[in-house]
Image (cartoon, rainbow, N blue to C red; front, top):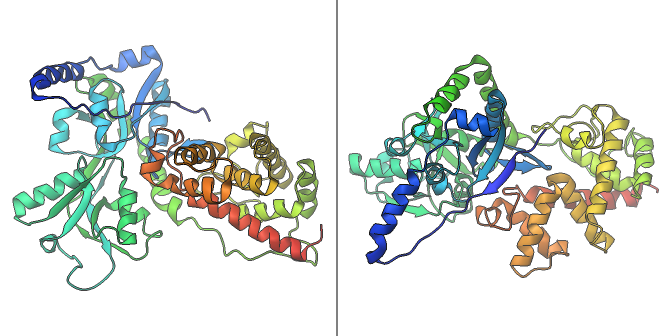
Length: 467
């Protein structure tokens, strides 16, 4: 799979005196009038500049491959147009439409609620889906629990100021006369992070789209998402004003039956499978016969020796990845015993990932590449954590964690207590939208726990299984 080119358009803050305000407003107005590219210019350039932001659903990098609901859908649209996709990353969600209006992109591919205010700024595609907004709160009874909009009177709700949630809450205040204390949070905070802050008790209430809330149910069983705060609202992408050819082509593509089927597949993948996918119950080890870990021991020993690994460590990795199931396929398409992404296997000229030996051979070739990647980490026990985390999340995310560790005064060459800590923080928008975090969002606790689990099981294997 080809990877999209990525450029960054960080938001800018301008502080000026009253005397220069009129001049700046004129410049700003002229910038917004910069001609936008319509379909003919886009096709002539061979690239569609797609404005996106990193988050756990729409765009992220997993095992070295870019993916996400909006990313996969807009990539399909680029294929339909016969052009390449260039991702223009915006770190602050509130800057997406202003970046589009400034002519720095051709299309915003993000789940945007169509509102009257936004329609004055940009044109929207036909709705891709519909969703209602719901209140996010703890599951509890008592005076703090909200079951209707009227019960929000006197309550404090945290939402992003540029979001449709913010607009809806102010509409409720105005039309219903309900005194909601609406506290705005920075555009760098994702809805997922605000949901986590409700779960941890940092805030009492936030608002989320129903589909986003449903995706987080399995992560936060103690949260209540049942109180609606809006009717069903249309979700769409945005294009600049006066780009009628691009908008017409996009709408015709969205209306096609094949596109609608593809949207349904992606919604299932990213809103249902991603968070509900769970491994089978993990035991310390599996053995049908004394001294054996699995029926694949001969292959594991053969290929572990080729990269200088203890075969029991490689066996622990196989168990963590697939529970020794050669037919296993993850929500993201990782396949076989070592749960390789097809793109990773293709680097070594391998396509049949269901064959156990081929899969293990491809997996160990990749592990060997990662060993060379981290050759600068001289202590073997320290280095293996970098290798395992990279196998799980991709080396780019681990390099991001190193850069964050360095920026915040920790040793980038030490895993425990340093890079490990910033790997975990890669799920926090404050860190994954940092300018040094080139690969954006990562559910960093997963590679951290992944390395711990494999090494813990390996210790048990060493105690009971001979070398």
